[in-house]
Length: 87
Image (cartoon, rainbow, N blue to C red; front, side):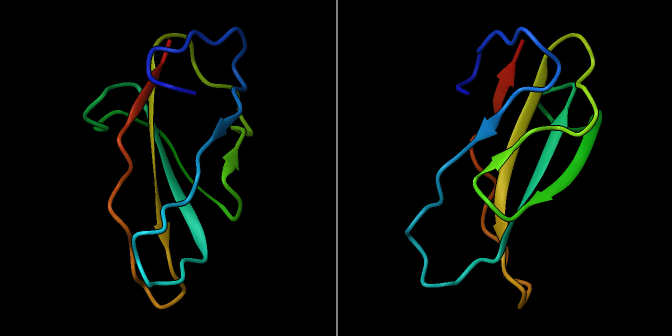
């Protein structure tokens, strides 16, 4: 969902598309969800092997920011995506 999306449940379906600007083959995605836009109050860090994520535990009430980056088995890491905030 785009930034500012209002969610009606605590299990939002987060999705993204992979970039194609790198010759590196990435194997999974790392996600960070936080209660603030600077990601200092983290709710969870998790991984996904597909371009979609639904939190296993419901998100707390209030705004939640999220971001994602790609990771390779060799240890290469992409930049973090632009973050989005759900309310």
